[in-house]
Amino acid sequence: MVAGIFLSFVFKTISYYTGFFFLKIPALIGCIFQVASIAIFMYVICRTYFSSGKEKYEVYEGFILSSYLWFIFQAIAFVALYFHFTVVGNTYIPEVFRGPIRHIQIVGFACMVIIGIFTKTLPIFLGIQEPNKKISAYVLYILNISIALRTISGFYREYTDNLYGFFNAVFLISGILETVGVFLFIYNLNLFDSKKAVKNNPNLPTGFRKYIRAALIWLFVSESALLSFTIYETMSGERTSHALFGAYRHAIFIGFISMMILGCASKMIPLSKGVKLCSTKLLNATFVLINIGCLFRVVAQPVSEHLYPQFYAFMGISGFIEYAAMFCFGINAWKTMQLDVEEETTEQITVATAGTNVYQLIKQYPQTLDILIGFGFKQLKNPILRNTLARTISLGQAVQINPVNLEDLLKELNKAIRTCVGLKVA
Image 1 (cartoon, rainbow, N blue to C red):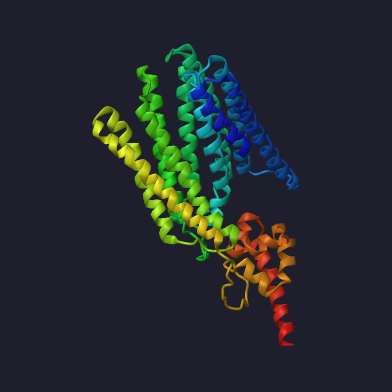
Image 2 (image 1 turned 90 degrees about the horizontal axis):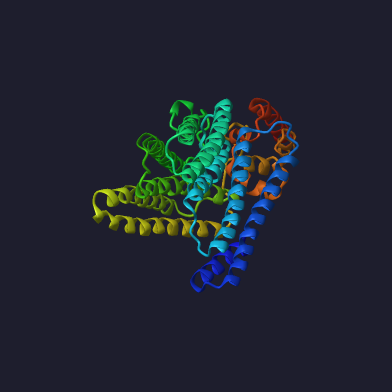
């Protein structure tokens, strides 16, 4: 992937300014390298899934697999486009391909993989009720169907240059289906319903909850805009302006996708090291700046194009604000990665409960490791995971990752604890 990006970027740029045909060959090789990288990555992921030995796969895995299939589809399409660039002698993406490919990139890959990951992880890390599996399955089918319909109808609408007729109706249906699927996903997460929070587990970390909520709000805004544009084009027979559609793309790329990535990384980077995030202040500054920057851009782009040209200045400012947000986050992540794991002073565990830290339990009572592995927590065989992931996970969270009966697990663990305490007393 690194070699492919380097070759594509360098030689596409040089060939564009020099016009030398032979410079396009290494750029094409770079594109092929990137496709090969994606294919290898998919192979590794699929082998990992299949090696788990599970008889039944979960819905979130369907989202992830779908996203990778859309990902490799658009990668192959870009290789085909580069052949087209070489033949025609320019790098302009024909309008007939531009809309469908961008939609596959945004919704087919980026949004689908995020939905899949967070369908599984958010209930664990935020202490919310697990999404309804039937509704999640409906979302999976609805979104894949809507992406396919929008890709096909978007292509033929541009190809035939006719906004009316059969493909226009399909285009409208795809927009409605996508909106329904996205709204069902947001509703099914239970993130905005305090009544569905997991009870009796006050130690669940919730520091990045605001990122996830803000990202879902931006997703709601962007999908509402997309539905409005789809209905407008269907009813009026006119294209939505580039300014309005650009605002939509920024809302979903920065507001939803980037916000979700930043929120997830603020949790996963410290978790992978078994430490706390370096600076909460920097994380809060990132949150404020990224939202202000995104708001400036989303509002200023259509307003400056259609009403007040003076608002172009806010578009420029928004870029600097978003850059400052990414810079703050990068510094925070870098400093966090440099931290060493610190041993926390904790009280002696006498009774295992849902809030008991897995790492401290194993440390104080090593014999509980075999019990946890026996209940299916095979990840704990890995000493690296025991020293990192286990530090930030309670028993209550652990049974959400690997569903087992919590009462049975606690019963066996407490039996082992009592035996150990009895031996020490004797």
